[in-house]
Length: 116
Length: 522
Image (cartoon, rainbow over the protein chains, first blue to last red):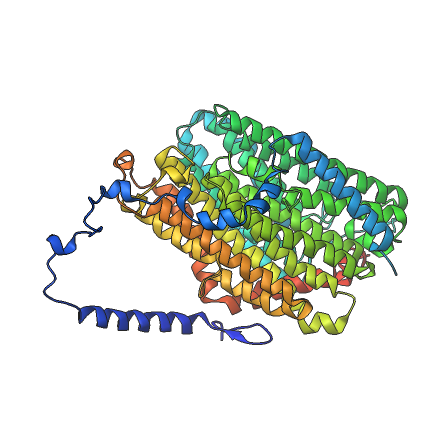
């Protein structure tokens, strides 16, 4: 029973998932083995076709992090403009935040935080 | 052996403290002897913490009175209240101790190679051991003033360690910011302690919890304590300092700083559950904690997505992960006044949050160590400049995959086990919390795919042709944490039943904590 975590509503057994994963891998490997046997490594068959254009060197083809999720950041540009504003890197600004949040929490607790 | 266990709470603090002072003279004589002293003392502390945990699981809360004729003599003859320093270790604090001991040992092993070329290594290990002693003190003390003292020890040593690589201007700036923030938080704690002491003449948490009257001053003290620990934990919107400090420290220290954040979170929980307890307007305080958690989850992960510095990236993820814990425990606090809801889902939510502390303490330091390993190999923290490192750093790549899958909550890894506990229970409280948690997990996975693709995938880059796998001690440290992940992944039920449920029970059971001190009158 040490493998089964009961959450109160359902259960979670990592061993089942690991077994499913292994079986899936075996099936995938089986299909892969049935693939084309006449495939020739290191020939033109293995070359990239880019609409007849010259293919850049492998090193230059690497997509770096700065180019990933451009659409996501463009969509959330306004959110990021706002969220980056307090991240000034200046300790004085940080302390102002501490004071403001402390005051707000103290007021909330004084009004409603404690009661018997 | 029984005597060793009896004195283990103080030994766990005293051994790293003594080793810290021995490190300097021994280090001047022999570097190997110094390294051996650090590792052996921390390994012995791991053994003691596990022995203490076993004892607590059998005999309940372990109380240790300093300076008394007998360690369990909490109230001296002729006194009505405890006056000595008392260490009080229950299932929650010993769980934090287990986490701290393992991560400290792994960090020390990682440091052997990571700072091997730095100057001032004797001072580094002295500060590291002081930080370890301070961390244990925060977790084990039953006394508010000692909590402040240990918080100071941890903060001062932490700031010095952040600024350890003084040749980097950003390290000095990070250390300065950390000490300023820590000083503010510590002063808030001291002021709150003053407010309580002025009214009740008490510093012992258990004794204070018994007599606290919930006056206006108590409310102000509560606000100061909660905010001070929230600042030190690095919760949004009080997190601004955290990436600036964490990202510039040596990676081994960043892993330890994360656990000090956990320790401050533990202190906040101890204040809410044990010091003020069920008499709080728990829905209000619970919702304050939940809102801090939700903000941290969202802001943490969205800020991580736009980072280019691998250590800042990890730091924002650390903030995001803290959010899950606060949401889980916050839900438990919000329903604390209703026994039916506590049994229905409150306790499960707390267990999920506490389980996530343990899981986070395994994979987040691992990811920080990997960030340090990448810096060690490439000389840059900018992962947009990296690529194809999987060709050279096979161990680091495999460990990064493990850490990434854990933090993203991908089954069967341990991150999933705690997240499923949180999701299922907090859904009963408010479905939006579960939805938020799942969305944040998706964003976490997306951000780690980005880093994995950018740094590890692709063709070997010419500038990294000479890169070699990190030294053995760094791999051993990372493998220790990965082994912890695998163990928790395979045996979630064992971990939850042995450590997590007793820890959440200990937080809920305020009477048990009080009685362990005040009930031991001779």
